[in-house]
Length: 213
Length: 213
DNA sequence: TGAAAAGTGAACCGCCAAGTCCAAACTTCA
DNA sequence: TGAAGTTTGGACTTGGCGGTTCACTTTTCA
Image (tube, rainbow over all chains, first blue to last red; front, top):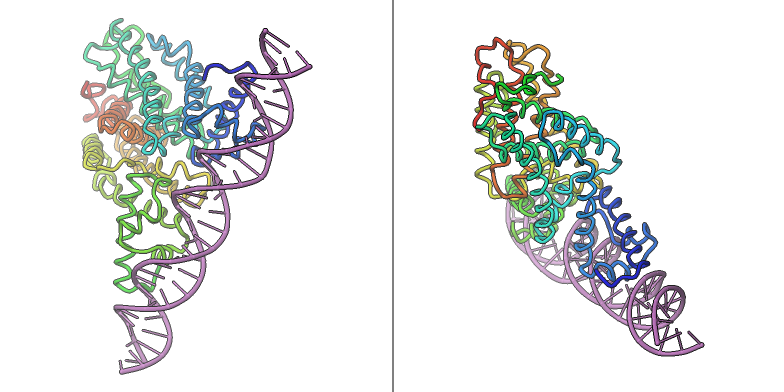
C-alpha cells in the first residue's frame, strides 16, 4: 500500500480504525462491509481500492492494528518481566487495559478463530502475533530463572505457554460473561502458579501461595 | 420434539450426530445446511421438520449433545474432585478425551462465541452449560476445603472460575495450534495453583509446587 | 385395509452481503 | 490552466445459503 497521497493514507487509516471498533463489537462474520461504509462515511469502491484483497485483507489490517494496541498497553512491563514486581505490574496493566474496553470481542485469537479454517493466511498472521506474545513471556521467565528467581528445573517455555493460554481463556470467559473478573482471576492464578516455581532461597519469592484469596 | 416414531427419532438423531461432526470441524458459520443434507443423506425439509427453528435450533441441539459428551468424559472424576488424586484423575481424563478428537473446534464456548451476539438464546444455553461445569469444579473445591485439604481462606468459587477459564484457554490455543500440549500445560498449571492453596498441614497437600517441570 | 398422520425428496424463492464498474470530483504539477 | 493521475460515490451484478412449498411415500392404527 505505497503510493498513497496523504489524503488517501488518512482515509485508509480512518477505515481501519472505524472497522476495528466495529469488528470488536460484532465479530468477523457479524461485521458487514456496508456497516463499515456507513460507519466511516466512505464507499464500497474505497474499501476495495485500499484493500484489494477484500474483507480478509481488511480483517488482517484490523488484527495488526489491534495487536499493536494490545502489545503497547503492556509496555513497559512485558519487555521486562524479570522480577515478581514486574509480573504483578504486567498483570495490573493487562487488567486495566481490558477494564476500559467496551468491546465485546477482546482476544484477537478468539476473533479470528471462527474464520481460521477458511482463511489460512489470516490464521498464520494471528498465530505469529500469539507466538511473539508468548515468546515475550518466555523471555521474561528465562531471565527470572537465570537471575536465580526461578528454580533451574522450571521450564520457561512451558510456563509461558500456560500463562498465555490461561490469559486467552480469561479473555474468552470475560467476553461471554461481560465481566472483568474471569480475566483478573486467571491472571492472579497464573502468578500463584509461577510463584510455586520460585527458587527456594529466592529473596523475592518467599510469598509463595499467599496471593489474594 | 415428542410424537416421533422410532424411525423419525433415528433420523433426527442421525442429523444431530452428523451435524455435530461437521460443526466441530468447520464452525457455526462454516457449516451450511446443504452440507448437513449431503452428509446425512437427508433433505432440507427434514431439517426443518425436526428443527422448526432452523439453523439456530439445530446448533442448540448440537451444543447440548456435545456438552453431554464432554461432561460424560469427565465422569466419575468431575462429580468427586474431593482429593488431590481425583483432581489428577480428572486432569488426565480431560486430556485423554481431547487427545482422541480430530475436531478442529473443541470448546463449545468458543464455538458459539461468534454467533452469540445475534443468538441470545443460544448464548444463554451455552452459558448455562458453562455455569454447571464451573459449579461442579467449585463443589469439589468446597469439599476439599471442608475436608481440611484446602486452607479455609481459599475461595472455591474464584478458584473454580480460574480453573475453568484456564481450561477454556487451553482448548482455544490447542485448537489454533492443533496440539494437545497447551491443554495439558494449562491443566498442570491449574493443579499447581490449587496446590498452593493446600492446607499447611494437609497430609496429601505436601507436594506443593513440585509438579512436573 | 384404507385413511389419516408422519416422513421424505427436490425444486424453488428471496434476502443479503461480497465484490464490480464507471463516471464524477479533486489533487498535483508543468 | 489543463491534462494526468488519484480519490470518491453509488448503482449494479453475482452468488451462496437459510428457509419454503408441495407432491410423493411410508407408517400407523381403527
